[in-house]
Image 1 (cartoon, helix red, strand yellow):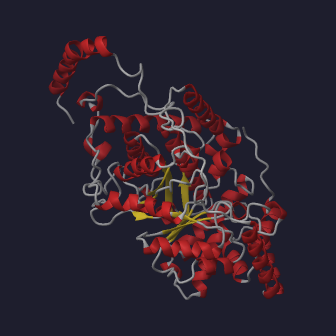
Image 2 (cartoon, rainbow, N blue to C red; image 1 turned 90 degrees about the vertical axis):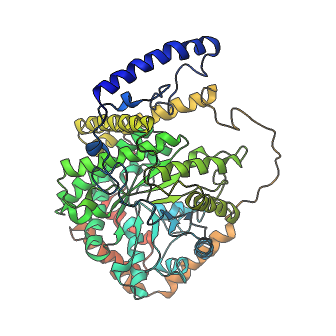
Image 3 (cartoon, rainbow, N blue to C red; image 1 turned 180 degrees about the vertical axis):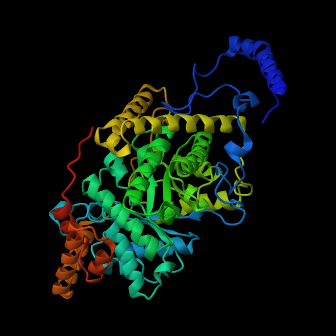
Length: 560
C-alpha cells in the first residue's frame, strides 16, 4: 500500500522525532507506566503508529471493500446506511406473563428484535417442579415448562414479523421445536420464522457449565438441528457460536476469536461428517461476541474475526456461497465489567462498549442495563440501555460511514496482530487434535483461567484501574435500590400452572410422543420432527430432556 522510498523516509523522520522531541519530554515528565497493553495478556500498544506498522498490507487481499472478500470491512456493501443493526435487548422476566409485558414495552420503545433469556432450570432441562429447580425458578430469566408458557410469552407478538433470539444451549432443540410448533398453531409458514438459537454446547464445557449430555450426543443434536432447519426453517439461524461467554470467563480478545472459531470449525466438521453440504447449512451459522471497554481493540477484534472466518471457510472447507464465508454476529456489552459500586458509571461503560461494537460492524446489539450486576434490569434501566443504542444510531454519526476506523494505522496494525495471534492458537488447537480434544483435556480452560487470574491480580494490586472499585471511590448510601425481584409466590404460581397442564393434557398422547423421541434418540433419525410433535402434545421440557438423559447419559464435567 505504500512506496518503499516513502516508508524509508517515514522511518527516518520518526527516528528524528523520537530523538528531538520524545526523549527530552520523557526525561522531564516520563510516561504513566512502563508498558501499555490493550488488556491483561493483550496486545502491546506502541507510542505512535505510522504507515511503517502496516507496510506489508495488501489492500485488496487484507481489506477489500465492504460486502466483498475477505469481509474485513464488513459483510454488507452499504453498512448501516441502508439498515441499522438490530437492537435486541435481552429479556426474560421470571414468569411468561411478565416477559410478554417486557417484550411489548421494548417493542413500543423502539426495539427491533426480541431476545429471550431463560431461567437456570430451563437451561439445564428441568421442570419448575423438579427438586433440582427449587429456588431458581424464574431467577435468571423466564421459566418455560410447556408450549403454553411459550404461547403466553409471545401473546399478541406476530412471529412472522419479529425475529427472536433464544439464549438456550443444551435443550436448544426442544425450545426451537416449541417455536416451530407455536408457529404451526398460529398458521405461520415455517419459512417466515426468523431468529436464532444459541445452541453452542462446546462453550458450555469451556465457560458456562449449563450442559446436559456428553459431547458426542450433544454434537449429534446440533447437526440434527442444522439439517432440520435447512429444510424447514431456512431463515432461522441454527447456532450462535459464542465467544461472549469465553471472554466473560476471562479470556483475552485473541483467545475469544480463536476459541470461538475453533468451536465453529468443530460444528462445521461434525455437520459435514453427518452428510450435510457446507453451503446448505453454513449461511445459517451466526456468532456472538462480547464488547469490552477498549474501543480500538474491540473494533479490531471484530474485523480480524471476519477475515479469519472467510479464510477458514474458503481454504479449509471449500465453501462456494458468499453467505457461507461471511461472519455475521450479535454483540452484547460486557456483563463482567459492570460494578455494584457507583452504579451510574455502568451507563458510561455500556455506551463505550456499544460504540466499539458498531465501529466493528455488528449485525445486532444488546446493551446491558446499569443494574444487571445486581438483578434483572428494571424498565427504567433497560430503557436507558435501549436509548444508548438509539442515540448511537441517530445522533453520533458512527453509523453514517462504513468501517470508519479502517485505514487507521493503529487499528489496522491491531487487526493484524489479533488475527495472527488467533491464527497461532488455532494452529496449536489443530496440533492437539481439534477443539473438542482441547476442551476435553482442559487446555482451553487452563488458558482462559490463567488470564482471568492475572487480570484479578492486576485489579487487586491497583495495576489495573477499575473506576469506583479500586480508584476514585466514594462513600455511598446503603439505601434500597429499585430492583426487579422474583418471589416464592411467583415460583409457586409457575409450579401450579405446570400441574394444571399435566392434569389437562392428553396424557396418553404425551407419553406416545415421548416414546417417539426415545426411539429417535436410540437410532439415527433426525430428532427434530419427534420433538416438534412432543411439544405439541404438551410434553414438558423436563420430560423430553429426561428421555434424552436416559438415552444419551449426562456429562459429569472435568477436563480441567
